[in-house]
Length: 320
Image (cartoon, rainbow, N blue to C red):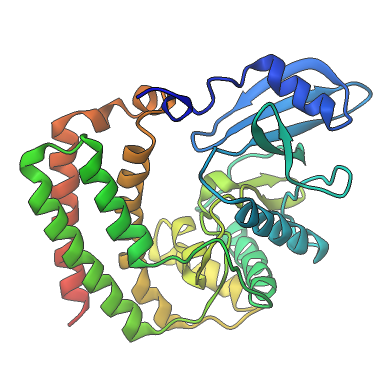
């Protein structure tokens, strides 16, 4: 591939990052640290006579300006409700900024360590905060950020995989048939559960929850969408006991529909397929083949197909 889409961040180097921060009215001191992020580019920047900042450059053409504005407004709404969510910094009344052809936002730097997901106390604490986040999320709606559904997380990623050239051609028919069947089964479970939906963090795994002596705080609402409450809970629960601890805390602040636990297996399957489609869609970005070289090998796709076949069997059993 050629052109900007072949390397979406080719024009973003250290000078451009520091210049963008300076253009927002801050004086960088030259310290610059790239933070782990594949979808966007995120840097920690030292500031003269002040605390450091985090600057996030949004991936070109992923979200519309309106969708980014909804993410930022949701983060600010949560922060205003005194929830520990890292919200963007307003510059001249705006959160979404532009420099050198890139869209970006500034955030206060908040450190932390991974939460202890074996600790019932930590899990209950996170559960209480997620209940409060969901209480705020239920007060409004997204118009531009999409939903957690089978079209977005199964059918569309499957089409991307087949079109990418990564999946060996002899598997195309099987992959499309298998993902189509999974989409139907997933939709059947969602229809049976009929969950209430609300604005969510959307990607609430352990990497997006940071712990300090003051407790947990939540970062990176880049995947905020509309979906069922269980979406923000299941990835933080490595066991049934952990889920019980999360829900015990959750129930102190918000009612939880226990029937939504039936959605965990569909959501886990959706995440597998969506991840494959995400990597396939980003393969032109040099960071992806370097980080996920295994996806370029036929044996990875053989295992992926086997995993999806097992998921189809589990969903079929769960339906009875």
